[in-house]
Length: 80
Image 1 (cartoon, rainbow, N blue to C red):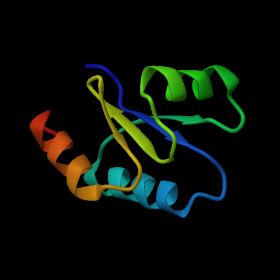
Image 2: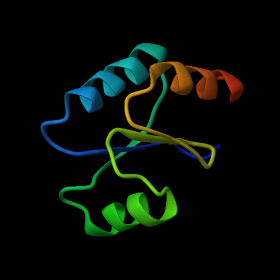
Image 3: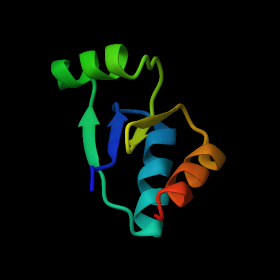
Image 4: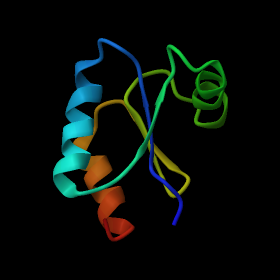
């Protein structure tokens, strides 16, 4: 199974909420801090056309920004 990728940055309260949300659901993820990881930032901007954090990628589908409803639907779609 492809990992869930969570793009974050420091001082991002919605990022912390998403981490807790995923933890409460028992969903593992790989965190990429776009402030410290330049290749991750490029990937976040170019591949996912993102401009805000958190951005969560599940099976090559991205949820950009704080949208728990969309993220919940995407996780359920993939049985998570």
